[in-house]
View 1 (cartoon, rainbow, N blue to C red):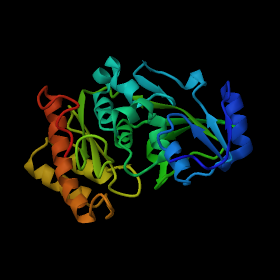
View 2: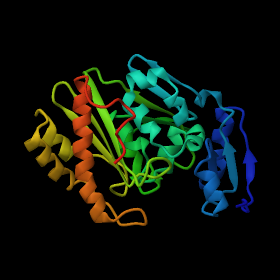
View 3: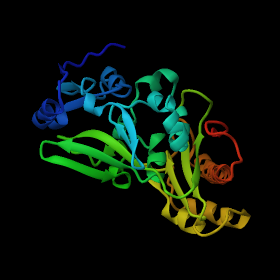
View 4: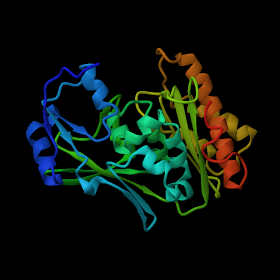
Length: 297
């Protein structure tokens, strides 16, 4: 399908030039990084910008580094970049695991983590993982820089806290100091290229505290504080799991769409939570499946 929308194409040489364009065009400008969403939207006339700003020449947005316990992901880092990193696999295996579930190999080669959260679709696979790591989104505009907690980033379906004249420059995740392990459990119709019908990320800590977040089970990805409150302070067992499974139903509001019914999603939410927590705890004690395996429902 060809692109029939007419627009100006700009490839800025530095961040200042890019920000000037966004300051001038605001809502009428669209950023191009991986392009896995934007190109489709242009072809289907879902996006009709006056200018497309290609960010790929901005080297300051490239690469990632772990320093002082903080992982900084540049806005141009792709999911394949993460999958190919021994540092990510060792230090942030939950992020590595979730990256493996994103679409297809071809998409992962192009799609950026920043783009995934900027699209802000409820099914964004990276969102629950970023949430349990208490990530922050770094943005910059002509008026300066801001840090936006991931819990405040998603404001609704396909909506974020990013202002029209701002760009995401990086995402930062803090490596938890306490011993921990995690699991990303994705509900999918088949293995391979598919959007999540539901997704749950869980982190389990050695002091019996837990973090839980979901995607595709409500209008936006989010943490589950009520579920965490039920779990915290207790060893994972049948009674605690039963209470957690009841609690999470109060924190999700799935819909019926072409991929799944509301009722099926609610049923599978409890199953995904149980499996994610059990695998996270097993991994915490050196057991359970390897990261990247047995995480598709």
